[in-house]
View 1 (cartoon, rainbow, N blue to C red):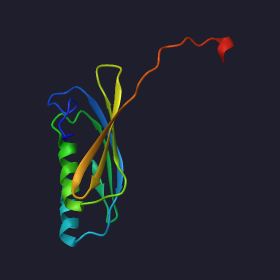
View 2 (view 1 turned 90 degrees about the horizontal axis):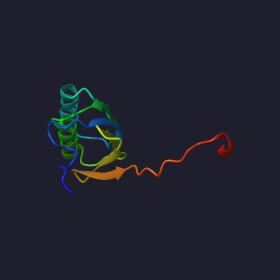
View 3 (view 1 turned 90 degrees about the vertical axis):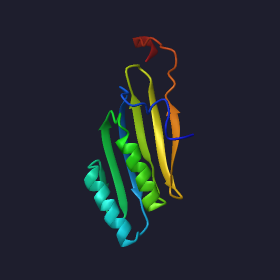
View 4 (view 1 turned 120 degrees about the horizontal axis):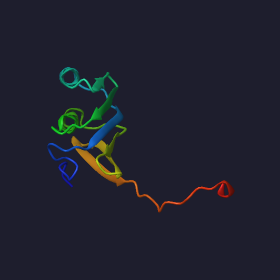
Length: 126
């Protein structure tokens, strides 16, 4: 599945909460410099010599976070860990996107919360 989906339309009112910690191998100096520049461009990313941390909450209707994750994948090639994105919107539906970096590519796995029928809670049922 491509990175574009029903969740990635410009102007979308969906709220996204990206959170992740990626462990990286030792990288060449030129790649480290590019990562530092990337972190300056997108302050939601914090880069150290061994890890990249992401924390962003908002709409991302322009796709800055996803484009940055794609750039990261091409730069670092491989990472241990994942970035989780909680997606909420103008409905009561809650879904998730899980991102991993492998072989210079970004992969996404979708997940949804399925709600069971509502049940009344009573004193005797506790």
